[in-house]
Amino acid sequence: MSIQTIPVDAGPRARTAVRPHKRRDEGRAGWGLATPFLIFYVLFLIGPTVHGIIMSFFNSSLQHSGLGGFAGPNNYTEALTSADFWQSMWHTVLFTLLTTPPLVAIALVLAIFTDRLSRGRWFYRLVFFAPYVVPSAAMALIWTWLYTPQIGLWDTWLSAVGISNPPNWLADPNWAMISVALATVWWTLGFNFVLYLAGLQEIPRELYEAAAVDGASRWHQVRRITIPLLNRTTALVLVLQIIASLKIFDQIFLMTAGGPNYATRPLLEYVYDIGFTDFRTGYAAAASMLYFLVILAVSLVWFFASRRPQKGA
Image (cartoon, rainbow, N blue to C red; front, top):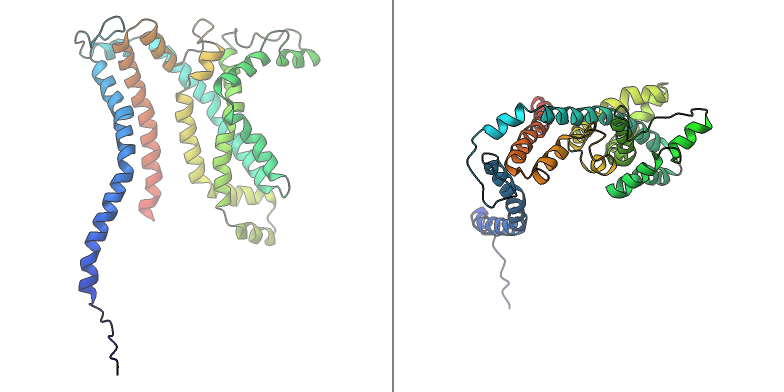
């Protein structure tokens, strides 16, 4: 007669004794996965930022090695009292004001339109998002050709409707920034469009069905259901768009080079000109740090504003 051994549960003490080792192993695995990112983060983000802060307090230049003589806060004082610095800052703010409202509003309208379609939704998603994957150099080339006087597509269309003397879009100080902003809206609209589409997927369809049963029109459904439930998505899109517009450089540098007569030069191009044309890297570092504080302030405003509703929940 064989005797069966019945396994006896050692109880919670034995189980809990194993858990610290398991947690320790999971912690080591987590740090192992995070270490490459942390190394990359320190070398290519924290390191250059700290070096830039240090450089901003010295008379650094590309014409000599080392940090140069200690300047203290003189670089910051010069930047804050420079008319060119504030003019470039205003151009950056102006570009942000010209691009942010249409990029948010048009993306919302197109996303709602696409989400309501029953057929061909994939085609409209592709059409609206495709310009976003175009490289900045290709986008600048396309729109520079569109704006070419007399032979460009814009002038051809205007001539067809009877406007014979259109402005020189990229050479007129009154139209250059507007022209670059229009090209930017076409180019970057797809990113906000995709964010809104993702937000629309989170809205339960039952809400629309219940509203339709109660007799609500499609406009009332959008106004009373869609837009309120997209508030958090809109806040995210708005802040990301403001930050992206504040960092304008590529298309202005390629399409107008900051001209005509510095009428479109943004702050990043001002920093580029000071650092790599005038070789004053210390002063350029100070100007870039001041600009970094502006972008950081915008990010912090959104961060604390997005956390406020969670506290009341």
